[in-house]
Amino acid sequence: MEQILEWGAGVIISIISATGYVGIAALMALESANIPIPSEIIMPFSGFLVSQGNFSFFWVVFWGAMGNLIGSLVSYYLGYFGARPFLAARAELQAAERFFQKYGSFAVLISRVLPVVRTFISLPAGIARMNVLKFSLYTFAGSFLWSWALTYVGVVAGENWSFLEPYFRMFDWLIVIVLVIGVIWWMKRHAANPK
Image: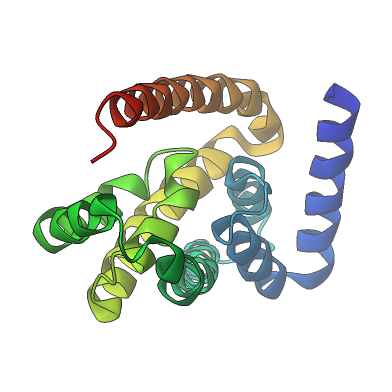
């Protein structure tokens, strides 16, 4: 597994080195479209390149956030047009719609700075038909903060930017465990009370 991760990191680094800002945006778009490409490698490595004078800090952050927005819109519309018809009669759909009407902007903004969750919030936002303009605004704002933080870490860490990856991975696993517990709880609750 570790060799696969190292190979993946090498591919990401090669793409960014060869294509610059376009590569950053494309990789971040793929990550936000639920393809497992870690922003925790993309942005710190880009920050390292900023520290070497190869990139501008602002444009790295901007294109990272823009890539997140593009990928998030793909996932949003997948939920909007693809998943919603299968859930139309479910009580959970009405609950999701109420949640996104009341807390959607805050949920999208906050989720964008949480590993794992940040890549999956778009699908339920699309299913609940959250206002796409608000979704886009808060997605870009939260993604900008995330991209800024990771890029800054890469600038400060310099050549040692990759030492942070294991810490991000541990945090990812913690979030995954919490999500799995939440899904199990929801399934048990739903099985006990199907209505």
